[in-house]
Every structure is written in structure tokens, then in C-alpha cells.
Length: 403
Image 1 (cartoon, rainbow, N blue to C red):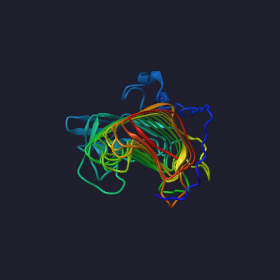
Image 2: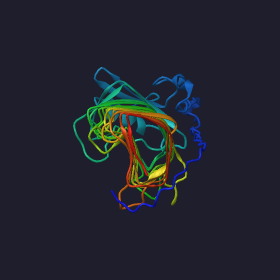
Image 3: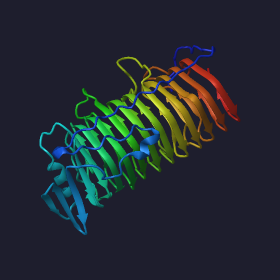
Image 4: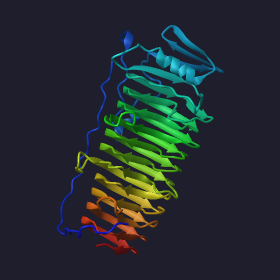
């Protein structure tokens, strides 16, 4: 760990900290062809009426892929555009049958379950919605950015429902996209990464306006959900179970609102965490205004619970429940303007709560830990940061070594 951090400035006066909520962005309903009206986008994450959303396949659509016995058929209206035994080819044919160069969203419904090779993808162009009413089992192997659901350089994309099993490279992969809605996503995997949305095709332009209502990911060998280079992210709930790396990893992402991260046995034996912010996450220009807002992080077992690293910050986490985490229950390392437990939190057992720094970047600054009950663990700050505030802490059988 690096030394030479400026002498910390302690604020002892009580203050009130308010974490405003970003309004969840909503996408307008679009008109279908033939006089039909496309169903409106799913309710915003965290709303009590989220259960009132349409069931998979309900509402109007423009093309469909249906399995009957061992045969897949794709149709648009009265025209059959594919017949065969390939789920992937039927899905792609249905997508390709939509109006070329369309200016409004058109919808495909997939009815039936089947397998798709890990070395292939179903590509979604702009103004496309897809509802997969069945299970895609990903088999075999592949390389690169293959995914059963894939989009690149596209806008106005919606995946209403998706259930995935098997071993994909990525379950959903989207690069340099905008105005994306992922509705009810369920991935019970044996390997791979669940959802990745990035801007690595052109890093000068961020992916924008991404919404994930609910993502359940188990068994991934990599991350459950990862973003990199996103501006405007709204997440309802990420549920991660027995995932190799992070439950939710935000890299170089700004203007994000997350309702809940719920992780169990995630990132065991790694440097990742149930919730991790890295690579200047939350940095706007050269500063760190509060723009990352997280309602709740729950982490049981596994590796770290909450981890902020590599010049990230601008974050408020309202509530934490961290239980028997390995490594560090909390690690804040070279981060700026971070508030942990703005409302309440508990850390029980497991690894220590640690404020640390590497010597190759500025140390921690403007960090607040408050409203926390720490039980059977330790609290340690080394080296000293700048303007570090500890307030309303209850320590039960917990050592403290802070500046």
C-alpha cells in the first residue's frame, strides 16, 4: 500500500446526507404495423405494480418463431420465412423478416425451448423487441463476443423475457448501444458471463440509457452483470447466486441508479465483490459528483461484499447487509466521494471493513461510513485518507484502527 497521503481532516459535526433518487427512464410505447399497438415497456424497477407487466408473449407482435415437435418455424404474418431444426436460425429469420430500416420498434415472439451453440449469436438490429417464451440451452464452445442475444451499434432494443441455461460465452452481449430495456432475465448457467453492456467498439461514445428490470444469474464463472462505458443506467434487482466473479460490476459508468444487489456465494476467493465499482466509475470530467445511487447491497458468504477501487466514486449506498464475506466485507481503495450506509447497515463476521490505497494513484478522499453496526469483524484505515468521516457506528466485538 502506498504512503504519503495527506493528513486526514476529520468532520465531527453532525450533518444530514440526502441521496436523491434518479427517476427511472421510460421508453414510450410504439405503434405496431397493421393497426396493432405494441405493448408498453415494463414498469420501472422497484415499482409495486411490476408484477402487472404482460406475461411472456402477450400483446401484439410482428413475427414469431415456434417449435412444434422437433421443427422450428418462423413466420411473419401469413409468410413462412424459415422451417428447420435450428432454434437460432428460426429466431434470426424472424428478426430478419421485420421491416427493413424501420423507424419504430417491431416485436418478435419466440415460443418453445431449444439449444443454441455457444459459437453463434442472434443479432438484434435497431428498433427490435424480442420475447423468448421458453428456455435457450447454450451448448458447446466458442470464442469472441458470441451470445444468444447480441446487439452492436444498435438503438431502441428490448428483451422482454429471457430464460437461459448452459455455458454461453455471454448470455447477453451489447456493445455501443442506446435505449435498451432488459425486462425479466433468468440465467441458470454452468459457466460464462451473464450480461455485459459496454462501449468498446468506440470508446469515444458511451452506451446510453440502459435499463435492466430484473436479472437472476446463477452458476456463471465470470460476472453476473457487468457494464463498461455506460451513461444512464437504471437497474431494478440483480440476484447473483454462486457466481465466480462480481454480482454487479460497474466500470467507467456514470449516472446509475440501482435498487438492489442480492448476492450469495459470489466472488469466492477472488478480488471481485457482490457489488464492485472500478476503472473511474462515477467520474464525470475530472470530478466525482454524486451520480451513482444504490438502494441496497445484500451479500452472504462468498468474497468481498462492497468494493470501490481504481479512482471510482461519486456513490451513495443507502443500505448494506453483509454477512460472513470472505476477504474484505468492504474495501474502499483510491476512491472519492463515497457514502456507505447512508440509511443503515450491518456487517457481521467475515473479512474486515478496510479503507486502503495503492501508491500509484491518489488516496481515498471524502469517504463517509455511517449508520453501521459491525459485529465480529474489524475496521481499519491504512494509509490515512483525506476527509474521512466515521459517524454513528456500533462496534460489537470489533476492533478499530482508523486515523
